Structure formats: C-alpha cells, structure tokens
Length: 540
Image (cartoon, rainbow, N blue to C red; front, side):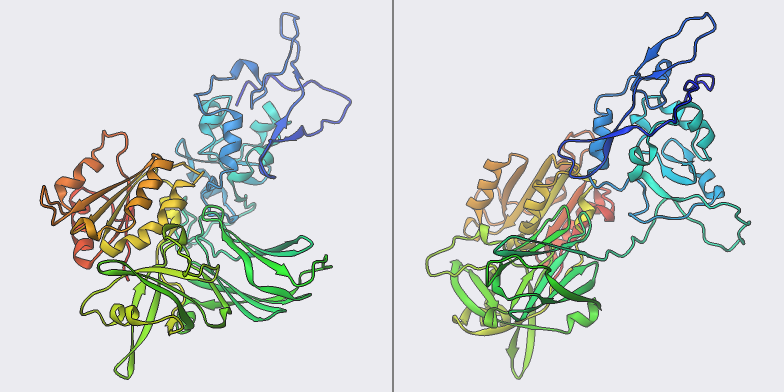
C-alpha cells in the first residue's frame, strides 16, 4: 500500500466520497471513481507539493508502471464482463478470520476492509501501487492499512465484483468436524430466473434474467389469449411462470430470444389492441424437477419433409394448433416418439437452426417450427417411419434433454469440434454462440468433419460461408472412402492440434458421431493427456 507518514491533510471540511462517473457504454456496470488532487503534508525540508497521482494508494512515489492491458479501464471492462472475480459463483459467503488468513498468497488473495471480504487475486496486476504493496493487506483485516493511505478511494465500487462476503466477528473456535469454506465452491448456487417486463404501444415483452452462460431453455404454452405458461430450463430444473395478462395478446409470439452469453430471455408478444397497459398482469411461479418434466410429451405435426441428399431428409415440425413454442438450450436434443408394433419407440435428434437450411416456397417457416436433418438408415425403425410421414402427420416430442454446459467453454479460446455423419447437428448449435462470445473472445474454432464420401457431407457450402465471414472458424472434411488418401480419425491426425508450443493449441474438444467414432475419439484424447474436463461427448 504505501508509507503511513503520508496522510491526507487535516481539514475542517468533511471528507466526501469521490464523485462517480459512469463508463460510457457500460450499461449500468462498474463506474470510474474520480478523486480530486490530494495535497501532501509538507516534507521535512519545508517544501510542499500538490499531485493528482491517479494511484490507487494516493501516493505518487509508490505508483508502479502497469503492464499493457492492465489499466483502470481494462479492470472496469473485466468487472463488467461477467467473470466470477469473487470465486463464489455469485453468492455472498460469511468468512471467518481463520478462513481469511488461509487466502494469503498472490494466486489466492483475500482481504477485509471495514467488515467486507474481497477476493483481490485478479486485481493484483491492476493495482497501481504494485503487487507487493497490495500483498501487505492480504489474508487479514486491512482496514487500518487502507485508511492510512487512501481512505478516500471508493473500494466498494472498485472491488464490488470481488466481494466474497461479510467478515464474521467474535467467532468461537469451530469443532474439528465443522466443514470449512474452500477457495473453490464446487457446487454452484441454484439459478432462479428474475422477471421483468417492458412494453411499446403494440407490443409486450416478458423478460427473464438467468445468468451469464447459464444456457437456459424455453418452453411456452398458450392457454388462451390472456393466459400463458412460460417454463425456463436451467441446470435440470424447470422454473414455471403462469401469467394472467391484463389484455389479450396475439399468438404466436413475434420473437423468442435467448442470449447465449448473457442468459437473458425475451418473449415478444403482439397486443390485440395497440394501447399502453397499466401493468402486464400477474403471475405465479413454481418449480418442477427435471425427472417429472421428462414424463411429459408434446404433440407435433409434420409441416414439411423433403429429401436432402441420397440418404437423409429435411424434416420440420410444429406444435398441433401451434400452441407450444420450444427453444432448446445450446447442445440439447429432443426425443421423437413413433408407434411400433402396438408400443412406441424413441430416437434423439437435435434441431438445426433454420439459417442452415434452404427455405423453399412450399416450406413453411415460423417461430414455433423445429427443423431437423435426419439420416435414413435402411433398418432404422424411427428414421424410416419419419421419412414416410406426410404433412399433417403427428408425432410426440419430449422436452429438451441434454447435459452440455456452455459455461465449460468460457476459459477456452482455441476449441476443436469433432463430428461424424449426422453427429454434425449438435455441433452446429455451438458454432455461433462460440464465435459471438465477447467474454474471453475465441481465437480459433476448428471443425473436423468425418464422412464416407463427398455425397455424405452435410451443409458444405453453409460451413464454407461461415469461414468466409469469420476466419477464426475453419472446417476440414475427411473421407474414409476417398479414392485418394482416405482418412479416419487417428492419433496421427489429432496430435498436431495439441502440441504444447503451438499458438493455437486446442484446449477443449466437443465430440459427436456414431458410438464407435466417439469411443475412438476419447481414446485418442486420453493418449494425448487431454483432461476429461476438457472434452464433452454428445450422446443421444
């Protein structure tokens, strides 16, 4: 921090907190603390000076040169990025003095100021007074030290995103078997959606806030023009909002948006009568566990079916009477159920965004429509049955299912996608969320796509178009039955992607294909010493 002899001058005026100036475009996030120039006490030689040092310590002699990318502006951007700077997953955790003392290292640094504990690990390199100065207060109650050198600094604003929790006072010695807080919270707190609404004269927007990279799913069921049930899927829990609206709305909704990075959900509804509403209405919330929800099915009807290539077809469904709207989390699938010999059989399919498909004149496109690319297997009971269905035929769909966590990709900037055949469909759902990510922006996204022949490749032109728009994405096709140099997934093929000295070394892998392909891919990654936490296998 700094020399205790340097204190703010005595004054009859009450010291006030610094003025706050909002950072442009911050959207209500962290603000810049602005301090007036501080006068230093006269030195021993009788001279005096006035300085606006800009140092977090307020001491110009202890101000250190910061590394590039570690300015105050950079710190504010990091705070507003959604990164978990506290390490507690967003919840406040009371901290004992004993626990505080354990976090006393440069790479694990907590400190207390006026009864509040902050995790300053990520702030170390941003501290204008230098790491050594900040380390003087780490692992302890640094209030006195802080007040001696820069009491005027607005630390709650500067370190707000680093807040761990309150410092527990007058604690008694805990029993030996009392569980202690660790620096890593293994089980994240439950995410409960927060509701808000806005309106225009002709539109009503229902907003549900989850959390950054929570990867929510959405299911909306229309009861009538005044009543809607909205379900949000987060971490295997369904959060239900039963709405009774003030006035009638038009169905289907104008838009259903889910921000993959922000976790914000917006359901835009047209009003039957264009006029301001005094309120949206009322709603009741409830919670449904994942297992109970999986017992439900939804009746859908075929709206379009057409051959896509020699052994696959473009297949589109919408809810019967258009009463259900379903938006799946990234990387999730649904089970389609068809009758078979007096019973029923299911297969898993991942919807494909309509932007990947060519919409023809006779192909209806709507918000409630789910589009699929399905490979037809000669002896496949479900794929053959679906291929024979005509427009108007009905099938049953499960709610969204899956285990993929989009947040697993946050720390990775070079990602590898491995797909074989129809296993491309869940991989497609990852591409745009990864490329559009602002937090820890992606450097390279490589897709290795394995098929038998050129005729088996899906969406070749569409994938090439993505590369032409964003050079960080690259797709390479590998053919096992190519006349010249046939290739299958192998250790030799993947090794260059994981060389430690390579700038674009891949640190995360997503895999989907037939079971044999998935097994081979996992075996190769294990040989390359890739940690199991650094790859995900999509399984139906």
